[in-house]
Length: 94
Image (cartoon, rainbow, N blue to C red; front, side, top):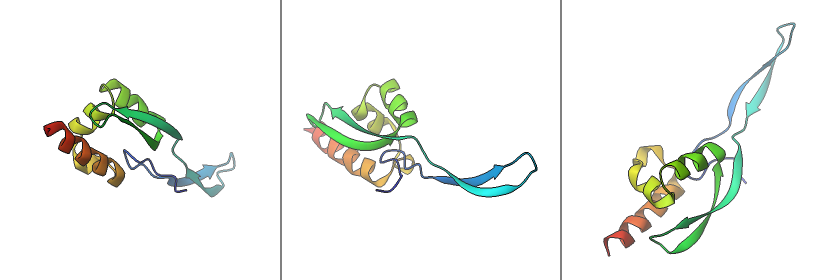
């Protein structure tokens, strides 16, 4: 399982551990991913996603998965989120 957020696309970053003696060793900063079920009112179903806590807070702030995906531009979304957004927009027109 890759450590990538399925909505925002955040990936692990690399950096250094720096000791008191200023020795540097490589390390990874891994995003805080959680498996969640988000409800889509337009699609009338739950969607299982692996997303970061920061993204979850942003989705809740914007009023749910549907409104968040509609408001957010495609360049800020991951591939799975764009697919869900297309389904939502398709069903929203009906």
